Image 1 (cartoon, rainbow, N blue to C red):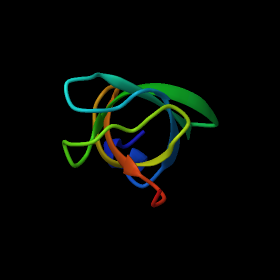
Image 2 (cartoon, rainbow, N blue to C red; image 1 turned 90 degrees about the vertical axis):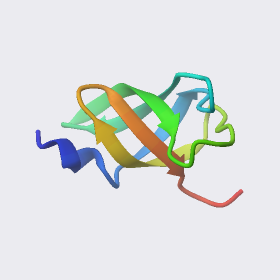
Image 3 (cartoon, rainbow, N blue to C red; image 1 turned 135 degrees about the horizontal axis):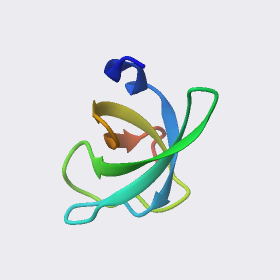
Image 4 (cartoon, rainbow, N blue to C red; image 1 turned 45 degrees about the horizontal axis):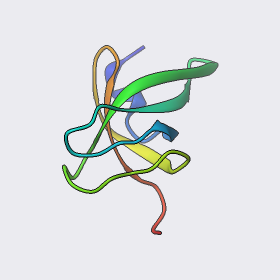
Length: 72
């Protein structure tokens, strides 16, 4: 899989994402769903579990930066 192919995919937060935290998201990829370590793309604010997010950057092998997909 090409690294950039995760960018733009949607996922769901399974462990709080925020400054000073290593969060977790699950993303549907490669015909299944995989968990990735996650950080907020803007560097601030918390994203609680259950929030739908979009991957804006992927650092192989298992780290992504995400932003909320929808305004709250």
